[in-house]
Length: 407
Image 1: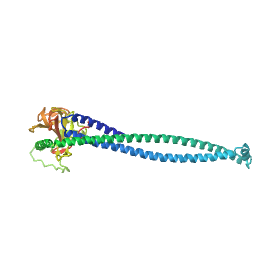
Image 2: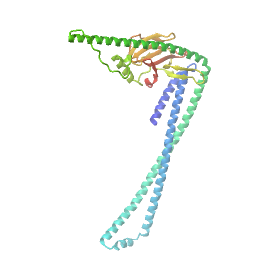
Image 3: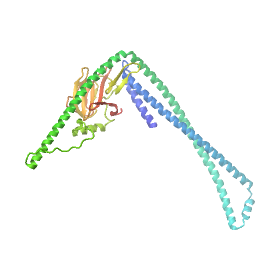
Image 4: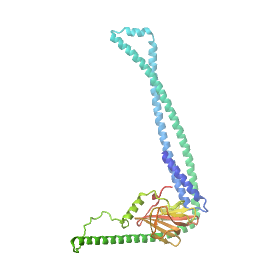
């Protein structure tokens, strides 16, 4: 739990730093709301962690109290038994009684047994004293542990109250941002309409690019098979001396149709490396916060909704460097009217960098991980820069965030 709590605290600290970058902007943005929502979720998770700790400590205190009571009863029993021994010894403290006990034996062996008994009785009394002292030591140790757990619980409860207070502050801050966003609903609606229009154009262009790549891959495969057939026929002519048509080879049906984008050995290897780097791909911008996550989204307090094909990242200013997240080949560089788009192919994977003010690569160029390929254009709200980043497996959009490294 301590490791989990430290990880949550680090994540909250990182989010707070990101929030500090956008908090000072002229007007409220979706990035502020997104970060506040993530902070609230993490804060609730952090409080849940504290609640689990308090529950565990409370259970430990309960069990420790039970053990302490058991030890105390055991100590009382030991003291009672020792008291009886002391009373008995006091009543039979005369040397004459001991000698009489020995000399009244019927035989020498009986006398030796009585001597052994007396020694055992003395050892028993010493053991009683040792057991009492040892039990008292254990009880004192358990009391110290119990006090430590109570102190730990008190500290956890204080931390819990502090975190609940922080949660209330964050909720109030979120409500303030939502209220201001509500007042900007008309402007936000225009921004989202612009984004939806850009997303639709982006979708059509990407679909055309992927189709073109697949057709090119199919053509290359047909040419490869035709060349292979020519070689086989030439080998048959060399072996028989006459041109005889080669018998078609029997092929076993594949259980699953292989992608045309991974037939090439090099592309297949590149796709494999891309897959192996899931959750370790670098972010396409050095400084930026996600304002709209992948998939369906809505803006609290308004009727505004949308469906993001990737993630929208805001940068502190327009013109921020945009970098390739992995090795690949540029499949397309297009102008969408209000911004440029770059598509990089990594085997069967495609990464798309949209809403760029400029591109520094051209179609067919080979790019490397971390290479600057363009610059961000102005954000839809006119404050800072913005990058729309998409990840596709052939023509299927997937959430790019799980593929990117944690920052």
